[in-house]
Image (cartoon, rainbow, N blue to C red; front, side, top):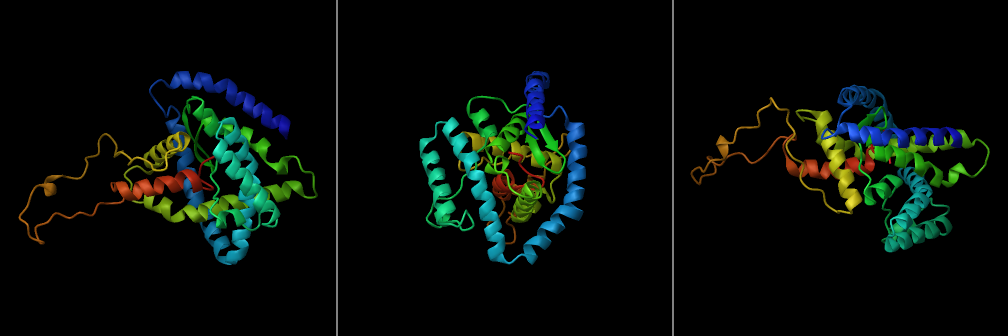
Length: 291
């Protein structure tokens, strides 16, 4: 397994500079493939992943679902700590180290988020973030089937992050099925949590693919910069599509009946899209961030 992973990482590391140079001013040189992958993943999510995520959430008692989520997060803490160290973020390193020690000991191996209850909440970090903080460009945008939006930098980072999980080095019975089950449970949990935000982001959009691409790229750059709030997304309607008429925004008599309508559609509303952006970057499980 490690050998295969190294080969994959070597291939990405070899191809990334060429792809970055070839893309010039185009952040999406593989748009044709990406759109096909997006369409396939959306259908799979609509008929399989989404319903299964909702079903698993409905069948699992809330305490058990919380325990599974907490264990998965606790197993990801070493990845976060290592990358905080690489980024020379001393405060975050101490915080995440405290989290994993407290939750592993007093939280029954991470089953209970004791540290989170005390105000120490998990802040994900990965090698893709580390590369970005040291100036590595994202490279071409990619929509990976099932996994979702990414780029060459984050794919390389995700491969490196595999080696930070303690589950890779611990030998125990049924290790492979358990690791696969944990990965599937984590993906379904993220998909269930992000469902409403994803619907708000994509439903009614003139071009759902371009909407998600713009959201992902801006969210990732904001995360790497350490921004707590994302800038409003620009209008991304296609070149041949007219924006809503602004004639109704002209001054009108100051009467309730003459006031122009203030509500906007989900495709052009900046506030809901900005809110959905944060959820997309962090929680877009089966169709989400590959960090």
